[in-house]
Length: 568
Ligand code: ATP
Image (cartoon, rainbow, N blue to C red; front, side, top):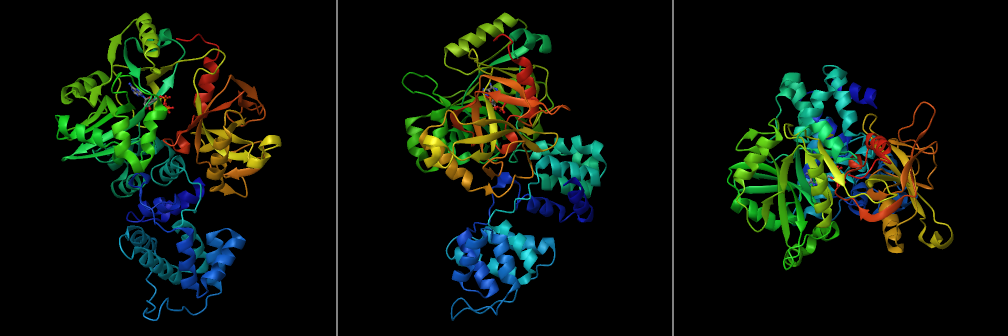
């Protein structure tokens, strides 16, 4: 994959490298921009019919047989018949020029941006014109792209490494990664690299309006270890809600979730409060939104907060379960990137710009050098129904996109359970037996993410913890991305009955981690990896996580090392 991409990048001009990267990842723009072509399989069949001169019924039949839009388009366009006008009043337009990446990209953008009255017909006709202008094999890949099924399996780290190889050498990968963490736009990083070199990349800073990859927490097993590592520690309550990165610029607010999706529409009251109560021209603030009970003032569980995801009744939800926003970091203020400042300085600035009100407040925080104070705060947090603590290194900068010991989470641990739940990516499933046969699914094969190799490696099979309804829903969800073979980014020694694209992340708990030859996560030279013992689904689909945000191999190794250590 590196070699193929590197070869491609070598030939790309500065004004097309961004498009090549987006397209190879099946996108038109960086994912946070959320732009899609808006062409369903049904509309695509009409476009293929129009471009190939076949009837819609013929195209449908070919699609039913192959199950793949690309193969269908290639086959029918190889046997092109003269195009028929869709209605008597239509003239057949001249195919557009679609010889270069730039030309094809421009048409795809036009398809995506067409909206409003008559847009469906216009999208179909633009797509059909594009298919008419290219060869059958080109039409195959374009068709898959248009319906969102390109599936080349090119992950972000792979793109970064290939870029480093072609422009400057592998040793520059970290600089590219840093720039990417600051802007979440691989295309922008690549364009900057080609037009302004590595110096230009190193000058890329965060900006309000463009999401920043979020800093993440490491785990440790005791308060003593925290103080041993940090000396002095900033101790905060850990709110089990919904992480928000809010960007405020020129009277406008934009919010991003943990996986960098725009979530502004979900939190109207927070947007309003930020505009009304923030003493800043522009800012990027991070915090956690939590639903609370207005009468008792009690914070409510994650399951209640997450109900905001149901987009249609936000107004009703906002009334029933109002939210409070606990701001815990300030990354940018009035045109200045603050991520290089020590945490305590950012925190002081945060407190100086927020006027506390009924919606926004700063997170609870104190600084200590004594482990017993951390333990006391932890117990008090648990007693109040919070998840635990997040402890931060007072002199550390904000490390975008990194999981390191600058932030440490301490969570409630149950006896005889793993000290933390894990978030696993589903890579396949097994057909049910016995009472589950009627569901067509008995359990799932789940994997952790290997950051170094940009691969998903299995760590367990899970059959427990699912209700019957959940199983049926999960099967429906997985069947959308079912594959006839193992996905190229999945490493597994076990054969799933049905392979799926690594896309969905679920929260899982287990009794312990063991060494095992059955699974590929963290395998050593003897072929022994790690496996979860008695895993169970805890009822949560982590829709706020991308597959690459699943628990990593490195974290599994860390959890294994921590096993058996006393609770904090
Ligand atoms: P991770 O984000 O580490 O991958 P996760 O999404 O499963 O894991 P947790 O492991 O529960 O979340 O812990 C980290 C999360 O805790 C942060 O992403 C943030 O949403 C939340 N959080 C709650 N309170 C705080 C706080 N005071 N400071 C930082 N993060 C906090």
